[in-house]
Image (cartoon, rainbow over all chains, first blue to last red; front, side, top):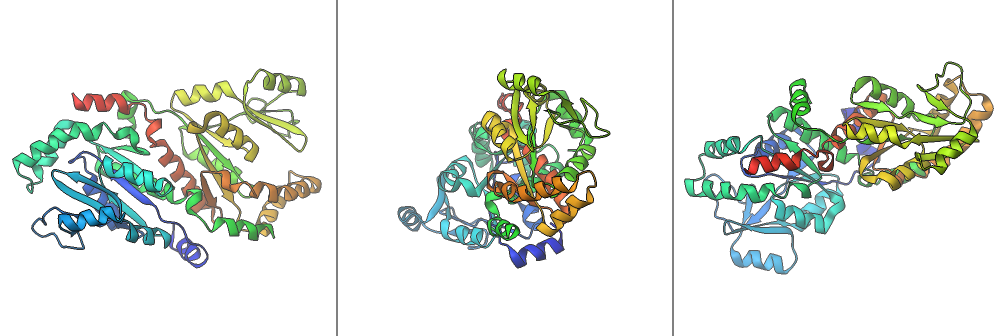
Length: 217
Length: 217
């Protein structure tokens, strides 16, 4: 939408935000795609997860994750404060429900960089608010090469991630869209297109009902 | 998708086509949008309807419509040869099923310029193949102005169409997407975006299943 359109809509209508899910095996490029989308589109924010994982060097609490201990995480699960949660390599990750729902109401979208377990839970709890994309790597060789380029993981973690690739891949059929990331620019354009189209879904434009009543007067 | 990507896909994969439905009250711009889309996108064809309406000057049988008599139309309905059909202003219109299904199988999309009655029937018969867009006019005044600019209809038909506007509008909530046509270029870009995104839907990419099996080898 151009700027004039944006102003017009902002003045008269409010869109309902959506949850955009990007999933893929590690190394298929979803983190790169996520970063570009967040830079490129001012109407979408990254979901900030809570995790029991220890911070990596440079990670900031409340920006990259909210870092909590196991007891706090368990309490959030018990109090149904999490929209989804999962355990990966012995660490727990989850999405607090309140900030997401508040964003959707004000017409902002939330980006989720989560696995198939989280996606299933989002779909169970809020199917109408979710649009999910599975990102496929062009090949397993390329995927392992990308994983090794990320110097942050040691060999043991890389091996574990490679073992997990097959399991992750097996869940592609649970997603709304599938994008093959064999060329980053094209894959990114496709992610943008899906997001733009999903914003045009009828049930995300609650202003229409009164607009049509106005037309009929 | 760029040309390289197209070649790659053509070589290894076949997409399933989709039925793109554009509906709106007369004068909201869906015919203009349809024409531009058909010019702009080589992978979509207009559905050719059968009708009992008399040809207008310049209309070509088999190109604009297949013109049939009432008895032939009734036989097609009886033999379940129509994907959808409706009566508008005393004339019957319908979509033959066979050519549409053949196109979808070869990965070509079909554009439908039909009303809410036809859209309901398409959804009943082939929900997974349908993506439907309702085009809203910016105002009733503008809509009537556009109708009057089309010199082809006489005053009586214009009045009938205006009476029908309210009924047409009342069905917007049955569509997947809603687009406000207050600026043609933006509305057209939105139609293109919906089409491109719908082509990325997982169930329209039957090549993925064997591709993922190949990755896992």
